[in-house]
Image 1 (tube, one colour):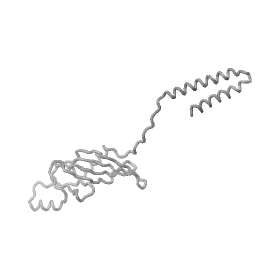
Image 2: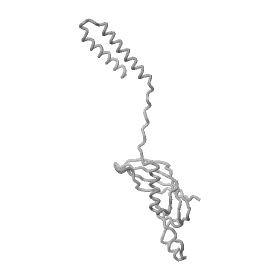
Image 3: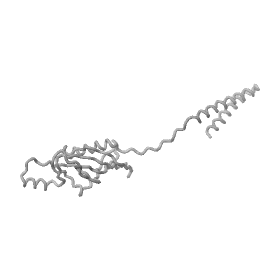
Length: 196
């Protein structure tokens, strides 16, 4: 439809432009110019029609935080909270969901992560009782008397772990969009299993 409108517009422009010069009675020259304009336009239309049409791009989903950045963020949290006693050894995003609430963008990233304990002690986290991951760690003192050992374990609730123990964590990062990018607001626990 657009091509036909262009053809009509060119023909009218050529005809009207030459009609002013018809005082000299040169109608044949006007017709020749119109035929030439129509031929040029036909060539342009043919060239356009022979080009492959670009397929419309599928809409891109809104971008949330990157998997690599989330893994690095978790590694930093684990190292900082455990003071190096727990180490992140693997991280994999399993799903993601973005929504907007009260004008603030939120992103929930489901993940699996592997951690390893680099010391013997107590991981101050109780999977059955807590909803969010914590990585505080109390290393076992080297030499303890039985009474001191009992006091140590009773004052440090959590899971007793051996040096080298590994765990697979399933969880969800809760992110919120800030002016400077995404920030973690919560690390929700959905599962913990021992890697033996």
